[in-house]
Image (cartoon, rainbow, N blue to C red):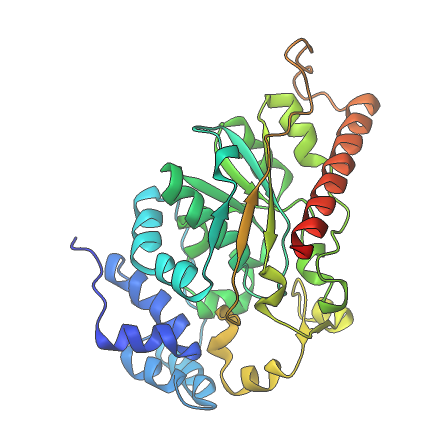
Length: 332
């Protein structure tokens, strides 16, 4: 199939915040048959205040008063590359002005666990931006570990195409899938803070939450080095927000930010995949190994107290180093 070519409407959507969701779905529909997806009339409704609600109702009626059908799609590196080159690059480089710094610390090949501070309390643009820049710089196939809400939540099933996160390379943040990805020697992009990173809110910006030690345990077990990355600028993706945790839990959301921006979102719900313009700089740190070449490999499926203690110690040590680096970068 021919590559996706931007029309005047696509360029308009790129620079009009409610249009990003249209752009993602139109690109998918260019490569995939999606009879349950949004149509042209519904897209146009996205662009007017309150129109998304009418578009949602019309689509629901069109589908026979049911949810869009889910599909068990697998990761498609070819579609990931097409989406990166034809959509994501414009957003990451021109809108978020993403840049890799200290590229001399970037290995030539994997496998790797790329560990980055995660923030912004919005769609995970800091993660997607780093994945895009790494794949363009080294030609890597990068797979981000993603929260299960990006796969299963009803809002996501209405917003985005079926299986979208999986096809683009997302790995569910569940123990078995996490370990399988490490064991397959992939380039895995991981946020050690988990959802606590973006969930901490504006008041604690650039203060790293506790790193979960699981990635260090798997790094040691499979001898996969960790590549730490310090991101500056991701806290500005959604500024001056607070996280309403009880309401977020009630809606089964990872976080629920409240700010003046949410007034606009109430009129344009398609802006759920949008974020404020910022300049994201990713500072590549030297590769970190929790082992030495002389160490014996841990036994398969081992989970001893010593192994857990060692993983916890290294995770906290890496957190302290990355926090110091972030503090220094903010001063420059």
